[in-house]
Length: 221
Image (cartoon, rainbow, N blue to C red; front, side, top):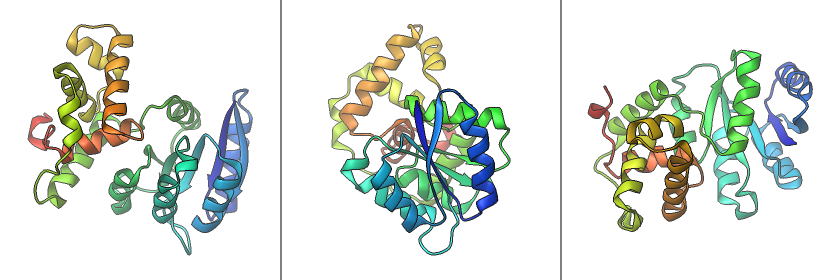
C-alpha cells in the first residue's frame, strides 16, 4: 500500500485528490495539510511514502517544507512531488535542487496522477526529457562554474555513462536500449551511481549530472 499525504491550502483540491487516490486499491491517503508547517508536522508524524506538495501556500510554502523534509534523516524514504499551476514555475527549479522527486501540474489527467504516485513510490523521478532539458537550461543560466563532486571518481566508466544518460532524462528502458544492455542491468548501474553519489533519488542525479558538468544544455538536441 502506497501511503500518501496531501499538502495544499485549497480544501477542494485536497478533496479531489483524496477521492481519486483512495479509489485505487494500492494507494491510501493517510493525511492532509493546509500549509508547509502543518505538512512538515504531519509528515514527521505519519512518515508517508509520497507527499503531493503545493509549492505556493500561505506561511511556510512547499519549497521551505521540502527543504525541511529532505534535511530530516528520519524522513529519508519520503518522496516529495511538487504541485504547481505552471510547468515553468520559478520555484520548480529550486524544489528539484532541494530534493523534490519531480513535479506535476495541477491539471494533470487523473490516470497520470495515479501513475505518477506509483512511479515516485518505486523511486523514479517525475522528469520527462523535455522538462529535464528546461531544468538543465535553467541550471545553466544560474550556475557560475561546475560544482565539484569528488564522489564522481568512485564511479566506473559505465556508471558515469549511465549517469550522463539519466541526467538527460532517459528512463532505465531508454538507457538500456542506448547501451544495448537489459533494463535490469541499466537499473543496477543507476542504483549503484545513486549510492556512490549519495543521491536521494533519480531527480538528484539530474542535478548532479548538470552541476558536475557531465551534462550540458547544448548536448540535449
